[in-house]
Amino acid sequence: MERVCNFLKEAGVYYLATVEEDQPRVRPFGTAHIFEGKLYIQTGKVKPCSKQLLDNPKAEICAFHNGTWVRVAGELVEDDRVEAKKSMLDAYPNLRGMYDENDGNTQVFYFQNATATFSSFTAAPETITF
Image (cartoon, rainbow, N blue to C red; front, side, top):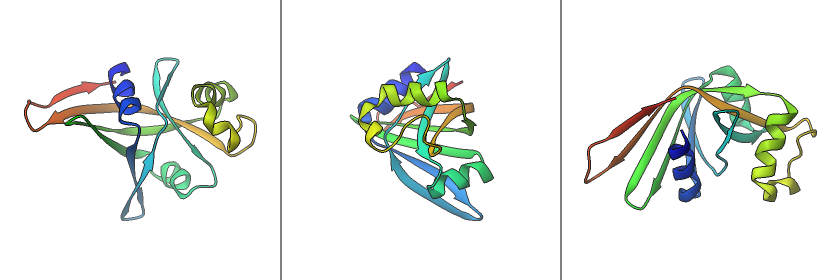
């Protein structure tokens, strides 16, 4: 899981795919953080992806960096604890201008039943579960 998190941070941007009814939705994200042994991402409760994840927690992210890409598929579970939100925002202090752990908007999710697959054009895929 640390390898996945480090890859996402090195890539800088990854793409989160969710589902809205029968329509896939994809958007860029940049937060990846390990807290209490789980891989977390962050969003705002006012954003459409928040509702999409609460309606259907199945999601996938994909990032590309230096000729390799990772796809992480699993379920994103909301963690509404202040400690989890604070940990994320402390890891990404640049977000503090828009978010605060007590603002009622900051939302963090962690991956559950996740499978990460590292791929490239020159090597066999490698899969990690967490």
